[in-house]
Length: 307
Length: 181
Image 1: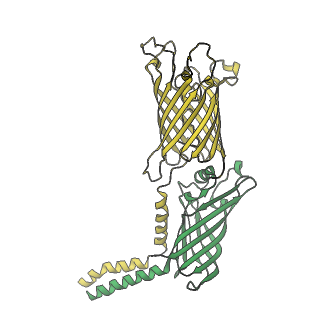
Image 2: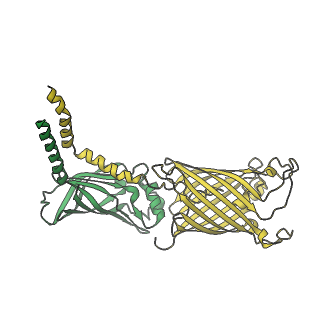
Image 3: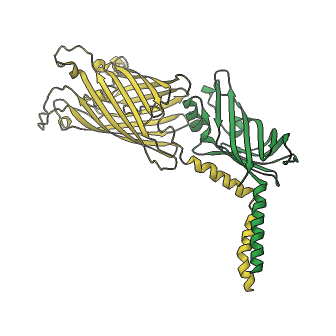
């Protein structure tokens, strides 16, 4: 009796070896194949470089060119029906070209109507979220230099250096499952020259350097459509409760439609202008005051040469 | 004690017998292309895992779908996100048997076919795959050619890109096996 007890485990081993058949093999293969998958980088956190006003964590892929036309109509409440709720007017237009040097580094140039701003930018993504969560978030650094060549009747730009402004941004993004993507983006903007206005209500002075915290998200509805939202909280005492020149935080909502090589965004926002160098320091219109602007972002991606 | 020892040596023997019977993939290339009026799409995957067991003629492979590499990065993104939904269905698999009785000890190329279940995009289909098996010393080289109808695996092509993507995709597979150690 004792002997059989000892032998029992060996019977199990022998049995398991015999049954080392189809199902186990398939499980082994699956495990092997998916083990390597764990390190895959999460794709399509956002579908394009921008959410609405805020940059997303996406960069243009290697050897591709992203041509974008971004348009904001006039404010809905300014002339109401007389300019078809802003449709006859233009708040800002931006044409941009961004090129991917690698899958993680892009450079771009653009021109906006506001301030006639010409800007150059880079976007670098040192970390990309992986499917096994070893890297839980994607990290992106964005730098943008703007130059305004506009005429200067008020003699604000005494030196060429005065015409420059800068935006630096750290983007932390994460995709949850297949539908939800969110990000936060601490942002710093600096203008080389400002008028030193004072807020009459709290005595705070306008500053050259401002800090803002951006946040945005995307919710995928169908395979090719999604809802977008983004918002900036601007940390500026001068801009708080300013009764003479009111300032507002930019909020945007939009719908995303993807059709192969194009990504369309139909948006509504109170942001003044399209680049951070415009909408962070100079935003005087609110949603409540019908300072909402309709607009669209169109992105078309071209492949430049073989990868 | 003696019984136990005999048993142990017997089990070890069975393991080694099993090992010679079982072949695992060392090199693989799964290629597919879609020819449509507007666009030619091609992708290659070299990460396939596979076993072939001579005694039971069992052939099975698992393809990590996300490892298909495309020429255009946007195609790759769309392939994973919109068509194959790789986050939901990370692998494609085949599990079946070789229909022919072949001598795997003699070098040469033989016509062969496999019948089994092909699962892509979470949808299982009974398939017959035709191809050849080449015996080259200790290596076995499987080559196969088949077509996949996207509709069969519930892969939807929206009407807006119907001109860009073929409804039937050609697949070529080359798998090189060696005895599993």
